[in-house]
Image (cartoon, rainbow, N blue to C red; front, side):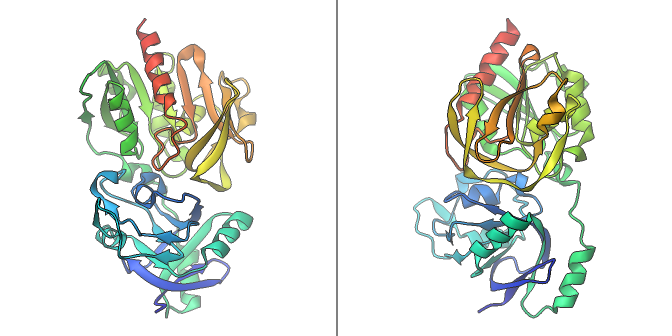
Length: 360
């Protein structure tokens, strides 16, 4: 029964069957090419206010496992799939995808032609959409779309409100993580390497961070335009050269902006677990997991003191930068690799080595 529909800004409509929450939602339409990991995608704060089209055709078939969430409060805008399975087969599953989406008020729609939607995004770029009831009048839906604005306060909504600590069993180093929408797996990877992590809100001052006497600073991933968080950019700039830093995704863009470089919005971004990236320092190719709609402008890096360390093989965009003199590096992709692949986990080891050098 087609009881829901997607309305595009040009008036095209895609009818399907609703699951999850039945509320209307306006969101930015993007696509993700992962073949697995829909739970990690659903709970990744970087997808705040985005309607994600899953290019893999069958979603929901292994349910939801209690240990696989990347955040406690999923904030994704919506999930769009070709075929939804509400009878999962998985011994670790405790809930269905639809029940979790209903719990967190996330709309879903299935039965639509996700291949056509993906082609639209690929050819024309990401765009606003409205997911609404099938009987909603088109003119009314288009009016709602024209008035809707994508919020610019996503980081403040998903960041922790108070500082908290995740302790390593064999503590060797202390890291302060600036939370712009961090994934749990980033903290887990640091803990596994003997790093006790103090997670602080996005707008924590440099003075407060340095007073914690950390061995290193981690800048997390997160949603939205990096220029929406000038406070974090200023904080990073003031700590430059004082302590080793590692940035991931949004953290990569924030580091670039703190040096005076620029960022830009991509046509449809990188969202998926199959992007080849070349490490320009080693010449090796890694298959990476990515989720970002903005990128660093390579032309703006000249004279900043930053060098390009990684490049996307598919479109040539900047995937990593570094200021080795000041012990700062960052990557645009996700080395915690949830959902995979796991080619880039060694970057956490590089951060640990950098902190050891900083101590010496």
